[in-house]
Length: 203
Image: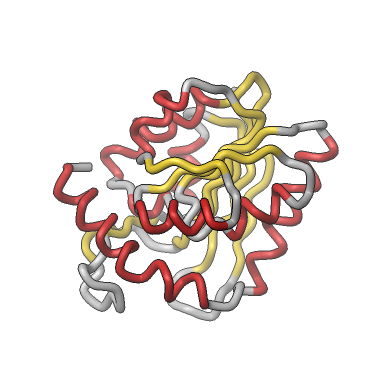
């Protein structure tokens, strides 16, 4: 992603950080989150990296369930909101996860990798794989159902954000180059796109 594209994305989320803080939690997101936590606890996993953490709602959930969390986000305003929740968090993008200098039992990514251009998704998946400990777990949740990418002109956020989406077949093909897919669930959300909930393990 170009520095200009990153700046646009960061500005967009900075502009709407406080609005997102006030938004109610979408109930359908609880099921994949609970399922991932259950798997973490059953395997004795204790450290998690939340990438694209936003306001830190998921980070706080895992912390409240005895998981040690480190959160990163491109938006400095989102990181400020994470700090208010006493979450260890840093302003960092997907392409530089190695700069954290730590390995994690698990990585959580809820609706953040949909901002990665398709040509660069392999770079980000490599970064995620490299920060995972052996047999580490990775949750990736994105909206999908069709193959597309570009600036979403109908976006309610300004500046408008970049989104990419994949068919179920294609997203599974891409991630399986780096991870073993444990489960793939299609969740209907009532909109044009469904939600692709994927739990994976480092190969």
